[in-house]
Amino acid sequence: MDIKKKIVQFESHHLTFFLVLQIVFVIAIMLLVKPALLGYKFSKQFEEIGMSGGEYLKQMDEIKTQLAVSEATEQGCENSKENVLREIREERQNTEECKDDIQIIGAKLANLQNEFRLNMSITRENFIDNIQKNEAEARNLKLDNSRLEQNLKELAESSAKNICCKARVDDNSIDSYSIDNNKVVCGTARENTLVC
Image 1 (cartoon, rainbow, N blue to C red):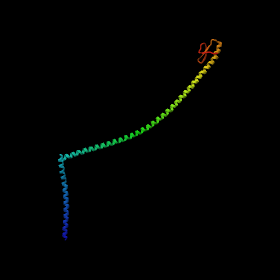
Image 2: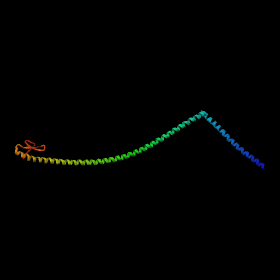
Image 3: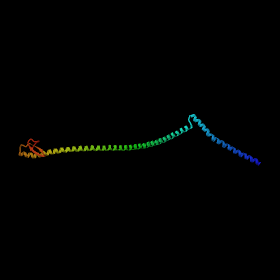
Image 4: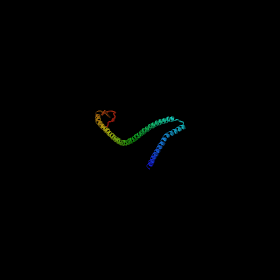
């Protein structure tokens, strides 16, 4: 019995070993055959498109180069876009600051205009008041001048009567007088008639 067991064990070990060996062999064949099949399949596809493998690889290299150039260009465009967007943001900020400055200046201008109008109104009223005061003073001065002239005329007549009437006693031809250089001059056919 022991021998039978050993034989069965030996055969089962061999069988297992044989199965594992077959699986490894099938996998090895698949690994070796698969690239050959893929190569065959690719060569058929190259024939269908009318290119050789070398031409295809060359074209792939050119496409890779073009792709790299396109990616670099795209990166440059992306950088340019970022710069433009940054500049736009800065300009928007500057525009907002300018709008704020314009509003502040507009408010200051409105205040200055209101101040100017108020000052002009006050100045106008003061100017009108001054003109009215000056006109009143001028009227008063005119009246005062008129009174002074009248008083001077009366004084001149009074002085002339005193002086010329006394002088007429000595000289009968004196019939009139005039005021020359602030002096009473008695005589004949002068400006003012002498009434004694």
